[in-house]
Image 1 (tube, rainbow, N blue to C red):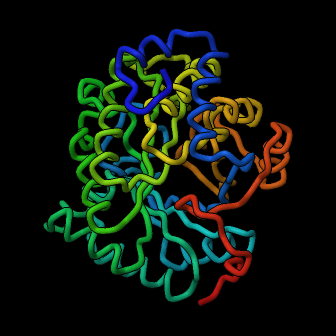
Image 2: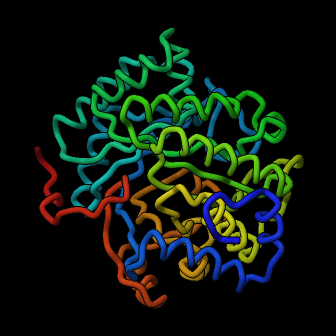
Length: 352
């Protein structure tokens, strides 16, 4: 049941098995790909450069609509200061993440990326598929031109944010104004074709069925078969947030459901090299358990984050906490960069 190309019917059966069987199946795939006892992690400086967004997702407690008094756009100076302080604290990558801003054109992002690269030696793992599609549309240019120009300006890789559930039946219910399934896939497909690695995500717990989740995994697996451009995948349960609307479940998935879904992802996405545990949303203890359910990566030490942190049940930990947690599980912690490669110590330097 754990070999290459597991079928949907096998996946349905596996998902219903005892947790011990799921753990064993996922660990088998994990050790085939990573036989060593190393568990990696990254130190990233997340900068939420704006909370202005016109996607109006029903599940998001971070965004503010255009014109809202609580909406903001950080100045370039503020962003650069945050990067400098993050690097001083050990960050080797930055994740610029915001909303679908109705006014920011491609030249804003190009100028910002160039300034970052001029001042710092840091990996730019930035902008969700939704942000990239939005800035292309606002700028009146093609998706390919937008990604090409972002890459030339300094973008190194693209995070998998904004995927939620890649099934339009669910997306039309929870985020009808956000990019659709095929649009999300096309952003990543285009990035891979242009030589930019990306990550993939799944957020579950919106009232979707197992079949919706399998549709999501199917689409990721097929795209990876075609491009090989995904460097990792992260799965986590929807965070209930401060403003959970009535159309969504009021209770997040249990820890056991998270572990079950993570293990299934590891087995189903056997063409992905890396699976990240989502300690930021489930906590260190469950994140530690996740290392026995197929994860070879413990995620990131996040230096400032406001999107997930906008949820009432989000968590935080420092590097020592995360390393200790990995060691408690019987693994060896090793720092990595944003594309899951180990990093030379000399990259601690902040200047070019």
